[in-house]
Amino acid sequence: MALNSFRAFLSIFSLLFTIVAAEDPYRFFTWNVTFGDIYPLGVRQQGILINGQFPGPDIYSVTNDNLIINVYNSLTEPFLLSWSGVQQRRNSYEDGVYGTTCPIPPGRNFTYILQVKDQIGSFFYFPSLDFHKAAGGFGGIRILSRPRIPVPFPDPAGDITVLIGDWYKANHTTLKAILDRGKKLHFPDGILINGRGPNGVSFTVEQGKTYRFRISNVGLQNSLNFRIQDHKMVLVEVEGTHTLQTTYSSLDVHVGQSYSVLVTADQPAQDFYVVVSTRFTSQVLTTTGILRYSNSAGPVSGPPPGGPTIQIDWSLNQARSIRTNLTASGPRPNPQGSYHYGMINTSRTIRLASSAGQVNGKQRYAVNSVSFVPGDTPLKVADFFKIGGVFRVGSISNNPTGGGIYLDTSVMGADFRAFVEIVFENPEDIIQSWHIDGYSFFVVGMDGGLWTANSRNQYNLRDAVARSTTQVYPKSWTAIYVALDNVGMWNVRSEFWARQYLGQQFYLRVYSPVESIRDEFPIPKNALLCGKASGRRTRPL
Picture (tube, rainbow, N blue to C red):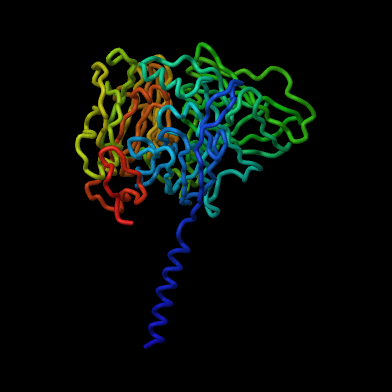
């Protein structure tokens, strides 16, 4: 009898060991968020540092890794981090925007529990509250393929994060106060590369070797052009999608977007300019860094190479040339082209038109005439506890209304597993950039003028790139297809950060009536509770 019991114990122990051993790996991070002095454009500013770093540390991970990120808020104000492009499968509570997550109070900590489920690619994190993004607190995220999954290019000699963005000399508190008064911000003061101003950053390479540069535009409003003097760039990945390997001499990176390029150090051994400049602006801001060969025989020579400035067609043609590599594996071994999105019938068309105007004498921005105002409780938290009076599903229309701008906590309902068409319409004379949390979508078409049903005739239904942030050119439209396979409350926003702050965003509530853990995880046990949810309990520990 005792022998049988011992054998049963061994069988159970063996099963438990197998389950634990098969679990996806965990990576642990402890971050302390503080204010500190920074001098990116030569004047002292109050920056947001993570573990004393500006920008913050990179996150290195592999497909399906679990990321345990313990964030201590040592600021004097509430704080949240969001993870641009990380899909938070079944888990929008961890998304780190105010519509899903209660802020971390000063002097407190919160542990984000993320899984980079079925993802690869280049992304970034950033602070999402109170215009903190204008003070720093951002950093790169790279998700590598698992060792057994083939990658469509040889391992590079180095993997380099390049965070570019426009920047103000004023502190974020000053910028926020201007917006809170209902005024517009002036044009930015400069451009940063990895938190440094002109010639403040260098990248060292060895002659003859190839390097991967992961370029993210973490700025506040401007599209930027990236180029390296006398070097070509081979595009290989866009926000988690392996692309056709097209060669470019310069690349437009719109605000909120991420690209991976391969650069071969195939020139004489010296230093070369890395150049970043604004696009579609009457005043062109430019900054430079240095690509330095390890055996360099001399400094940079000649002027920095020029790039495109206001040419829209140039950028549009480049965008259309960026396509999915159908034969390459993504996060799984099956080819990316095995999902035939163009053969699926859409069940719904959502048209989203941006607008700008004044409400009660203050500047506001809107989507389908609704300018978003936050509720007193994060929407996802209120939804979980079934707290009424915080938001109303259907408070934003599927289509432009043509009416004046008004304020509301705008939430659009959508069915789990629907396959929808979304058209971003830009009647204004500025370029815009739109992001959807929780998803990667297919950019099937973009063009000038007004979108009509006939515009579908020019859609790319074969190899459109899948990504989470897309540009919409002035007086133009961009159409996307998206499979709503991720239950949750998801932020749809302008990446023009002042516009986002003043209302150009809303939430998409993707709902499953089953309310099963198969479709969505329950609220985290450690979730912070605030607003009308204060004093409630998440679930038993």
